[in-house]
Amino acid sequence: MTKDVSRASLSRDAVLLTGKVAIVTGGGAGIGRGIALGLAEFGADIVILDMNAEAAETVAALVREKGRRAQVVVADVTDRDALRAGIEHAAAEMGRLDILVNNVGGTRPIKLVEMTDRQMDRQIDLNLKSIAVGTQTAAKLMIAAGAGGSIINITSIEGLRAAPGYAVYAGCKAGIVNFTRTMALELAEHGIRVNAIAPDIVLTETMARYIPALFTEEGRAAQTRYVPLGRPGNFDDCAGAAVFLASSMSGYITGTTLNVDGGTWASSGWIRNDADGWTLFGK
Ligand SMILES: NC(=O)c1ccc[n+]([C@@H]2O[C@H](COP(=O)([O-])OP(=O)(O)OC[C@H]3O[C@@H](n4cnc5c(N)ncnc54)[C@H](O)[C@@H]3O)[C@@H](O)[C@H]2O)c1
Image (tube, rainbow, N blue to C red; front, top):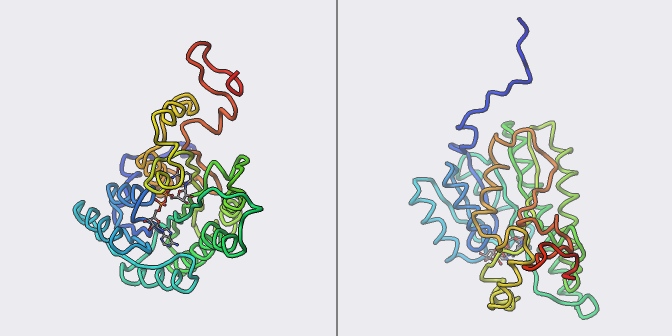
């Protein structure tokens, strides 16, 4: 009898990351912190690469409390040499590298016509160049090790729709989406998968500083109408997607962007109206 190759041998263990090593950039706070702790919860040893040493050490301690190994690399991802050296050093210290989460990114709202050259360069370095440098460095190590790997890039729903006040950021985030697709092809023959996660609103401390209106009573009420699932995203929402993309549960998935947005990309313009259900542009 011929073997039915369409039948999978999926097991609960497929989601476990035991024995894997993950580097999370910006793992000291916000979404990166959630992802670092989520990957550790499912068995991975974690390297937190962050420019804030204190925040990174705090997360490393939490990872160790889960019984996993943790290491901190203090580096600014916009410093190409420091990022490369940090990834190489961490992989050597931990003995391997299986997962890279290129998470650092961000901006405060500013119109393009008001931007200085320095601000523009800084945004591109932070939101796009660091992802390319990180991916290149990790890919070389993974190719040399010959054990495959998973690279996860954090983009944004702002990379999929127009985002006035965020032009350069949104351009970089859109760039990540196609960079991810392209790298999925370049690295496929090495068994290295490359995917992206696109969050929308996640109420981090940075968001509280940059967009305080999201945290007011009015702002929170607006989110219940604007987000189809009725609430902003949280760290576990992003961590769940990262665990899935890091694990062999997603072994046949590469080049894709997973929207972790409570449905905002799908709704694009449709807003929940308590009286009538869904209305387009709130009317
Ligand atoms: N928060 C949101 O609502 C949201 C929505 C969509 C996409 N995103 C994306 O998610 C990612 C994480 O966002 P967040 O809001 O959780 O971040 P955050 O501002 O909370 O920062 C997370 C960590 O990154 C570190 N960091 C910042 N700049 C760094 C640098 N140059 N080098 C090294 N470390 C650095 C910080 O020290 C901090 O520990 C970003 O790529 C962001 O664009 C966030």
